[in-house]
Image (cartoon, rainbow, N blue to C red; front, side):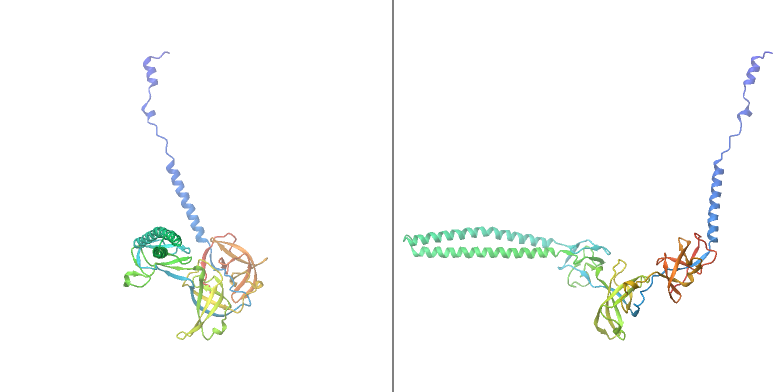
Length: 412
């Protein structure tokens, strides 16, 4: 049946309940919460794994002390010294206007270290150059006078020979020529004096520049801009006697005091090895330079100079050092092989001796072969290198690649 227009409009009407439908739920807060939980679980797993990592004691692999047959006959202590060391100062007294160096800086021979106030020296040099120029200019006039006097003398002689001039005029011409020659010679001497004065002024001006006497390293900067420096200790504490101290690092050697009761065991040219207190595992080849021919009666010692055969930036002046005087130098065939490790680090395997090496908190098996025994130490060959760490008394639960907690064992 047909519907009225009012019924059709009623069917097209939108109910309020249809418009108030709930909005879709947001999911990102749940994703963030899940990510936080995941991170916490990973951190907890890592912490639990670290807590369960077995703890091991490790020892440092050492280099062998020296070759067999070249044992130490004597030990002595001393200090590293520099044979070439200089406190650089100005050669004249003056006020510092520039300082170009700092401690630890490397300098070359002749390099400018500092400058003094050069106003007076510069003025004296300008005056000396002006005097030299004036003396050279005056020389031309004296040369012209001498030339005229010689010409006049020749003309007067000709006239006298022809009887056209008197003897008196010739005598006057001779005297004038001699006077002109003397004046010319004096002018040349004045030029020489002016040149010498100019050279002195140049030297005095050059003294305002403080330069390095040799190549080395600045170990002490003693003066600052504005201070008065002098080669003499004048003026009490207000005058500096040095600008900087330079040490030639290539001239470093060792001075040791040897008890006079054992000095007979040391001789010039004897091989030795030096061990710095700062690097006890580093053995530096050395050689005795000389035995200073005097004794210290207060300490009953004799000074011995020892050359370091290996140069390194790690060697610094005044470092403490222990020197082992060797019986003889090691032959090339007896150069120490392998490294030293504690005997407790060795374990037996089907393939022979192995050790556990620790790298970045992880262990790995390293096969080695025993070369010699020295008490509780074993000299071994293989892939081990001095300075690495090996596990002492490893447990049976270690596996290659396992993470461990390291506790360093005390070593002699």
